Length: 230
Image (cartoon, one colour):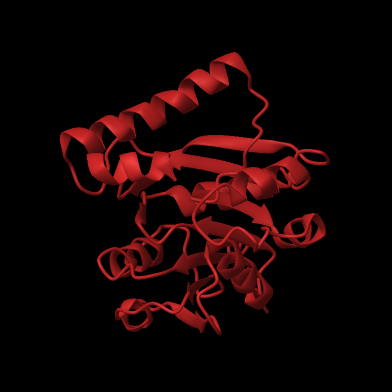
């Protein structure tokens, strides 16, 4: 009697919960969810949690049609509270935060999973924005290039990162809960990630993967001026 033993056994990768705060993002939320589902590392055990912050458009419907799991906030509360709610509902040990106005570049999810498998003691890891924005214009192209180069310069000067990137950053759920999550008193897309990072880096190192990237819908010139004024 012969027992057949497969010569190669596929090793299951860890599972990730993607958490996306969403408010009136109908133009980008569908393509974002699709860009996650077509990732080479995406599996049936992963989940895409879209936390609808009481949008006044059909963002939630679009996200659900593309395969996102929708959680609706009881009232408009801002991205910090929406992210916290998403984490509370997440079933996996690794949380990947993405903003609703981004597209996940191919291969990024698999690289995040591989990083945590190869560095089991790591708490979190940042990605960054691609030099190619979702929409192109002189102001948007310039903003994307500046942010990309800012990461390069930052790493040359100081390899110890001090800010967890909520636009594209992955963190272990238990550590996120230990730190206390984002401060929901920040209701706008303001500095909630900086404040969270001040608490995070007191105990944990922020790692960085330069080839884990999103394309971002940077604002035009007037929108950039408004952001900086705010």
